[in-house]
View (cartoon, rainbow, N blue to C red):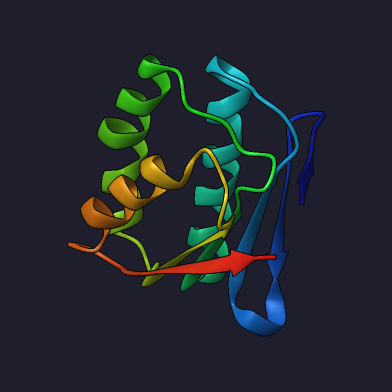
Length: 117
């Protein structure tokens, strides 16, 4: 488990999953540390599902988006990960960004949006 002022990431053993819950905006090393930790859990436990709770999510800095796509995503694609789930409210200002990510990620993973009330 990783618990910082910016996020919490935990291994959900019974679901063979990771749950990432954003708490507030972060960028740079704090943002990247989250995904590195998640990747370590994926490799260690052969995780198949990644949940991201976007309730307190934020738009990424451009540099972090590039890093995510170029550095981490290829490693996720080559891992045991099969499914990505975004938890998002219907009125979230991130809906457009998440739908764009869903479209790109569906080439490699099963992607689902779970609507939070």
